[in-house]
Image (tube, rainbow, N blue to C red; front, side, top):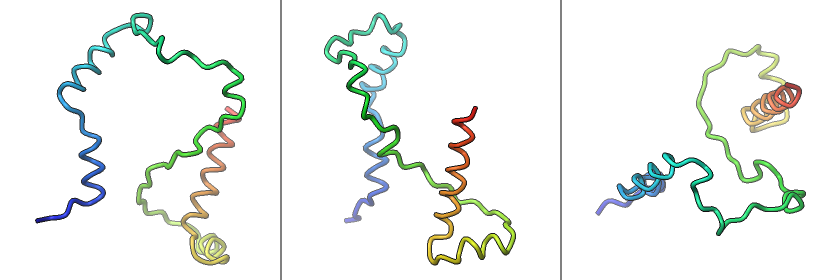
Length: 102
């Protein structure tokens, strides 16, 4: 018997049943004021004062091929393993800075 891989199990857990799809379609067709949210009341602003956005967020990685200057690669590799992670961290920080300024 073939063992199910973790990726296959994850995919299977993300698939919705027909009933779930119908329920979601019915909810999507309603306006916000028609949906009963009394069992999940809105939290007061004080409940969000220590909230951290994206603490558990792990972005999906995508393999790309880039041509970078040799001295840039050497600089990224100088501290040791993990130069791609360092490059990603530098680019992400620049992206977030730019988003905040916009």
